[in-house]
Amino acid sequence: MTTDVIQKLNAISNAISDLINFVQTNKEIQPDFKEYLTTIGVANASPSQMQSVCLPYLFERNINSKSIIEIFLDKTKKLTKYPRAIIKGLMSSVSSIFEVKKVLKNGFELYNLVNEKTYNVISLVKMTHFRGVGVGQYVIARIFEFEDEYYLLEISNILAANKKEDAMRYAIAKIIQAPELVYKDTKKKKKKSKNRLKNYIKNFWSVSKQMK
Image 1: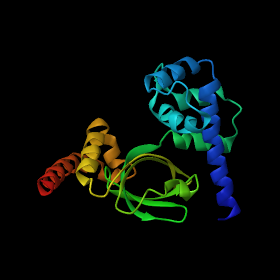
Image 2: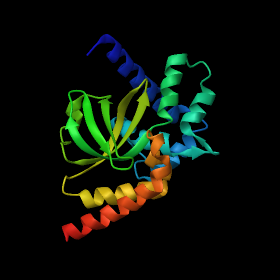
Image 3: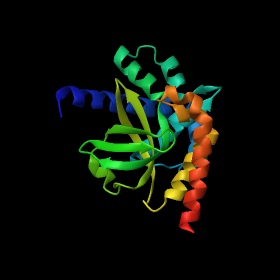
């Protein structure tokens, strides 16, 4: 791994750490974050649990119509150009369900069931953290793009290879919830999004019949 790659990975990890620290210490965010922890049943989360707890909060929670990351950028005016670019990249992260096509030295080759695109994603942590993830399985994961490369932020769930029906059900739910994800990273396919949804539903029922 080159020095430049290591420096970039460290910069991304530092940016995420800054966001997590902000969530835990900012007076405007603290009350909402504590309520969130209580709601999900981890009011006394340990330091080792905090990152996995914070990530969904960072990307899915809004306060006064602003995302947590937007509030962070508003409150952190002295943030230098490079970390700010990373944070802005994080704002465009995508959570989806992927089929694991390959396990790589430093990440995975993942096929996004929602937009039918394959990504080579670089892990921000050692691959030993993902010993239970293998080819053919399905993972619910969050990725983001920075400087023309994709990075793996988290894997929140793993489905066995024989759970294709469940994986497709999740993909359809994602498409219905956020249709724009169908043509995320594939703008040329925007006009085909409705047909894509119809095909997914058709394929889902086909798989369901085969598995009965």
